[in-house]
Image (cartoon, rainbow, N blue to C red; front, side, top):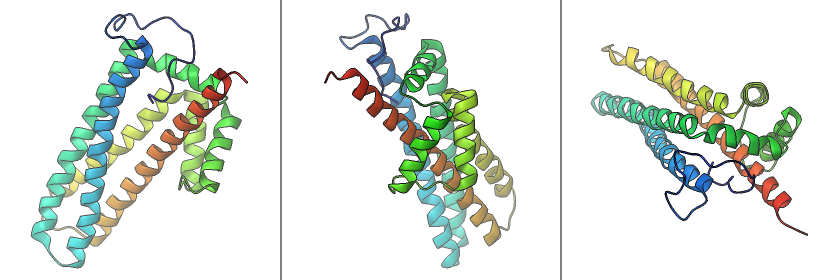
Length: 212
């Protein structure tokens, strides 16, 4: 999200004014992005363990699989905490409203959002099935960026709930592992779509802000 900053003139976030030599909104973006980046790193590590879980099943290694399940759960807990902390920070600082205005100013209404996502898919930057495409476009256009992020984090919570239930069982089925993998894959696609919207919006803002 930090790629979009210092291109829309608005009031400073009062809680962070004067903290550094950076533009106050730039500082707010940096503070928020530290949390988001941390959450993304935990998610990536958890996803890697899910892939390892598939391997454990192929090699018939249930002991290692149980260890991976514990690791996946812990990593998801950390990811969710970091994302929630970022959302809380954005709301308190006013960054969520600032970012929303920046995205809209960059042309991301419903049609613009669909165009950006379609182009990213065509260019090979994004893999997004039709159902998720519609969900991302509709959520952002009608409920805003913060709601889109909330929908992403809710996917992680849903995965964690399924994982917690399964951890209580002594036996796991191959079907469970594939359900888990599907949940992570869908969450990854939504996360990538959010990143694409931020990146494309930033390019639009730079073009507007740069004189001929």
